[in-house]
Image (cartoon, rainbow, N blue to C red):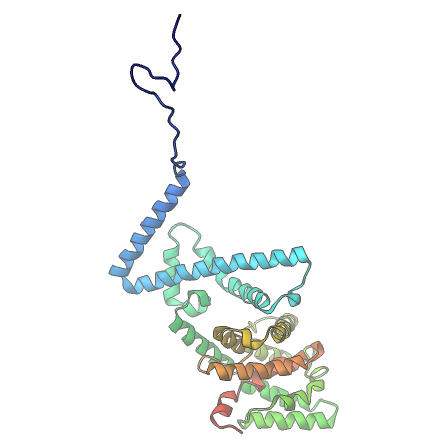
Length: 336
């Protein structure tokens, strides 16, 4: 009778055990390619750092900015998905989420041309050239070095500051059409003080808010020159027809008003130093050279004014980007 051989029985004096492998599955082809690409990229970066240090700074700034932009894009996608699933509007979001949506929208509009250019293979080298030649005009804050960020914010504010006198003059020209004589006198007196270098108090500005809820100083009553000046102060293009200028101004100042309401609930003290400086700069104050304490103090004053204004009076909030900012630094040097 034939003998049956078992793997667990000795055959020819030796055992033939079953081999049970404990090794993990071999890496997939995609994983190997990814690992190899990361290794090559790391060697490439070390080469640039050694041989071309100036170009490496540009390259590393671009790559870091791109990663930051992608991270923010994922966060914005999460926020929008939350808005859809919970049926909430922009003005119902918490402060940080509201601010992230607002800033990301502005960033992506400016960054879109550069991102489109960089899509084709090796086109990122053209982007590096553009970054080097026109960093302020073409790039957003993610792609600026810390030194560039400080320098460019100063340039932008100087351009905004050039319009301050035009805005103050436009208020004085319009005030004669205010029907109530007391309001006329209050506005004229305060604007004259601002032109003389005096920083106004919030309570004094609040006294004539009614004049900005109707003609000639309400959002719907501003003339084309006033809207162009205010648009440039808000870093919006002035090269649009009057209807679109008015619509964009209303949209952006309402956004700030909603942000103010969310920030009042959240609390200025909860913001980081960088967030405080960014919030002040967006509202008209050049915060780049101010201490964080002075920035927090100014932001508290702004919120005190914003809290008292109705939506029909937001034109005063828009003009306060000039009224509350133009002499603030001088008031710190020479207190009233």
